[in-house]
Amino acid sequence: MRTLRTAALLAILLALPVQAQPPAPVDALEAGRRYTEWLYAGETAKIWDLFSMPMREAIGSARDLADLRKDFVNSAGAETAILDETVTPGASTRLYIRTARFAKAPTPFTIRWGIDQSGAITGFLLQARQEEPE
Image (cartoon, rainbow, N blue to C red; front, side, top):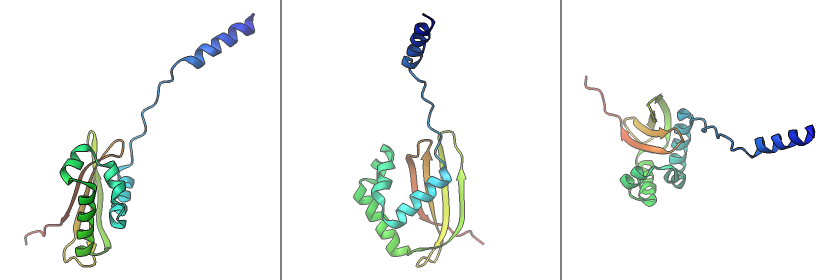
């Protein structure tokens, strides 16, 4: 009888729903580096898949993102040096900021990715760094 009760109790415990642990937040430094490498390599479909809906609306289409990347690479060339790389924490979104020199560009460029806890891209900016007034 005792074995029957133990088996019944075990069956009940196994049938209880398991509280799912929320996934660990994505490492924004790692994600920002990966997204930047995808951008350089032309893997814009991977980036598009991670864009939030507001980002998709802002960019327009996956083709527009690919064209933006192509124009950038054609004008700036390959990255030659990383000057600065930081992550700014936020409540729900972290900002990965990378400033780098490029082979054809006279001034460095800054790439910014807004990355939420799941790894979705909530912000993206690619611009020439403004020179500090002397």
